[in-house]
Length: 259
Image (cartoon, rainbow, N blue to C red):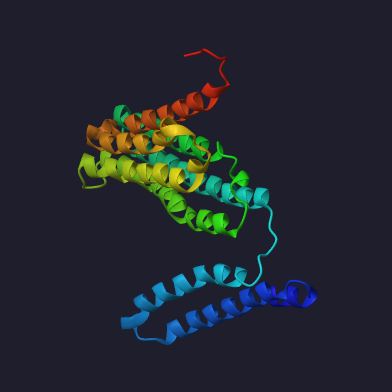
């Protein structure tokens, strides 16, 4: 595809040819990896992952391919919605299956409610940022794009963690309540920190706005030791982060002299 487009457009062929060459070399590497002994496959896998991720940076050095910030932001946003939606689906199925086998409503319902609040807060926190205003060149877009790996991973892990918490309550998972809580609180805290670091901090003004998400992440981690109430408490913290962020964002618009 890249090679065909390079032939059609004689004005900007270097970058597209670099894309084509880089992808071909990496794909050949994956084929060769299948023929190597098992002892070196893990190392080879890591090398090829780094090589494949480096192809765009290598290709764009020759000539920056035109791109639209709104479109790029939308694509990543849609993928974030998909991942968060999968978390909601996983948590819903886990709670439904647990309710079919158990009558522990007093323990299951707070986990379900807290998990939903966490996911909805995660959605709001991500989409409250007009990221297209930050994506002005490859320098910003590459760091922002690659930085989404921990965002996507932590968002997916939230749903898996809620499943673990449900399994622990219904005695299907032989782990402690703290360990089950950590399965939710740790990825939630990681999500808050990485979204702030990669996505939202470019639009924060002043120490108060910058501290909302990191401080909320620390508070979420502290709820780990609250036993079966860890997930609903973490949900309250993330909801509080949303409310605090909104309040701080609209405060500059208040009338002069307003405290």
